[in-house]
Length: 182
Image (tube, rainbow, N blue to C red; front, side, top):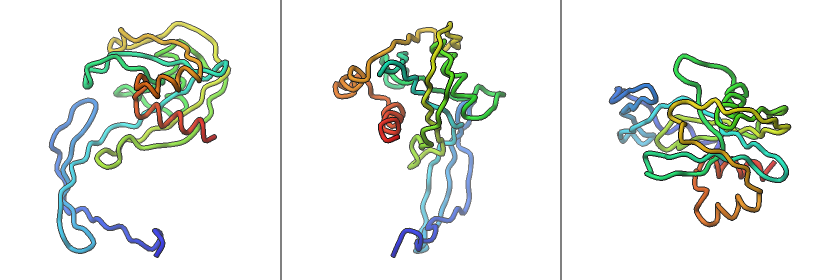
C-alpha cells in the first residue's frame, strides 16, 4: 500500500477557541479517527513568516537578539512576519525583514522552499529565501528588536557555531539545509 492509498484519517467534529491575542490563536478540536475512536487536538494558529539567508563572500549575515521564552540571546537568520494590518507576498516580506533587521537590500531573492514550524501542534508555515547582490543601509528595527545586532559570519564559522550549539534556531538550521540541498 502506498501513502497515496491512505485516506485522510482524522475528521474534525467540533472546534472551540481557547485563547487569542495579536500573535496567535489557540483552538481545541474534537476529532474522530478512521477507526471511530475520538480524541482532542490543541492547535496553535499563527501567521506565516519568512527566513532570509543573506549570502555574501561564502558567508551569511546573522542577527542576534534576546529571546524571552528561552531566556537568552540567540543567533539566527533574519526572519519575521507581517505586522498586524500589513500583507504582501512572501518575497516582499523577505525583502522587508532583511532591510528591517540588517539594513541590507538584495538585488536577487531566490525562493529555496516552504517548511512548517511545528506541524504536530501548529499551522504556521514559512518560506525560505536566499538573498544575494547585497547593498548596505541602516536597519529599520521595531521597538521589540532594539537589542538586535547583526554580523557577517563565514560559512565555516557558522557551521562551527552549529556544532557548538551557538546557532540553535530550528528554522534557521532547516533553512541552511535547504541552502545546502539547492
